[in-house]
Length: 118
Image 1 (tube, rainbow, N blue to C red):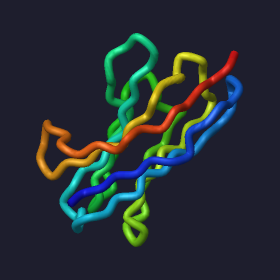
Image 2: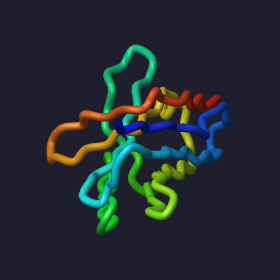
Image 3: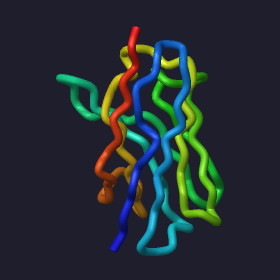
């Protein structure tokens, strides 16, 4: 059974940085894509970034390009989201997601809260 466990959230001032981690277990992920999504207060869940396990190909939402970096450590089965130049509008619960198919995200973590104060 696939399990995704996020960590690294917290409270940070605007302009600061945080690194989120997502530890994945339960199967091999060679052909999978892993993603980060977020849901802010009163907002719908939105895509933040994704990466393929094998090639490391990445994709980002326009709102985070140049500020966030997604990466993975295949040996540790862990995906990271390095967030810099954080803004109050980045405040959200951040979720890790995984998929072996294009266009769907069947597996989700429990989420980790990121709060950016102004």
